[in-house]
Length: 444
Image 1: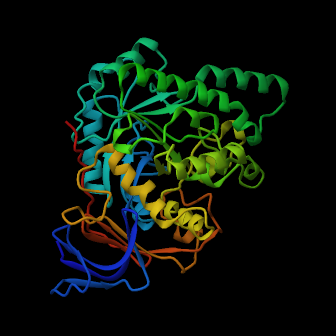
Image 2 (image 1 turned 90 degrees about the horizontal axis):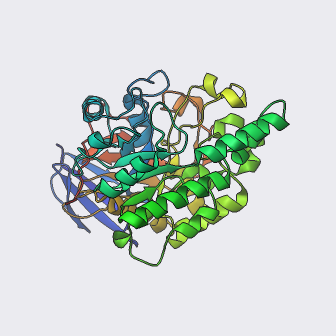
């Protein structure tokens, strides 16, 4: 590995800003100080640039195996590092669903040769695989994913006995997708009976706030009953926020929550322009919901920000509402979207770092990542806060080649990304020939 020296960077880390140098050796941060002068393989003059810990995205769908016509680990990991995301945690609803330890191991083998970013994969839960779930190693797997709502394949967990078994026996973090299937079915039937054709504007009414709250509150009740380490993904409603605390240290929380970029950026008013290209599950809802979620991020009720990056082809998303799948690509532009919030005065740089790196590392008990500290892995991103960047088809790296941010001009640009001490992205170019590392977890 190269010895790299970053000079004169404005460091954003652990609630502080300071101009400093960073010495990287053998993939690790060896020294943080001013005026470091040693012989190195590479020196980056970062004067005028801001240095942040690389983002850790705890919810992505990279579609491999089985759905690689729309995305794969090779393309999506490159989109990630181009956006300053250095580590990802990928979901189990691939084809086949990741419901056995052998299938989980297969995904790690793919990532070892294809991913330029650091990686981990969730073990999937189903109604009938508790024994397999309990074989998951908490030291080298990020968590167990439970779909408590509609999903693909055999991944909807709606059996009460199974849920009790999962929440009472799984010793590691359980991440949940929470939407109540029965409520959604009733809403869908009602709208089909009342209207000749369903439209995208009906999506947040069919996949309603009530459906989210019923499921989230059920997950919280289960977790409290069994002392489970629960992490609820992609909060989309104001109602759910009453389920979470903000007045205790994060490391002591047993129940945590995540917000996603699209639920912080869009509202139901945007369906008229964006249509199915902002169709997600859970749905983008009202501006009131969006603003409440944003405030919950700031006050600590919501602990981390992620993307739920879930590509589909442009053709799939162009179908009529009822036929178009939910999900979209976001991992390449998450940091730039958050930096736009910074420019708008909605978030500080310190808050962005806390919610995308520090807190994710604490929530998942990551080993030596998520902070810029001596002895930690050098997962770093340099940004130019004042260099505009317009999203277009030519610079989208996700395999699907579209983005809900297409034609938007962000106010900031990513100039360099380092993964485990290696420069993997520099001034618009991916540096090939480098692989990310498997994430490890400091758990008993």
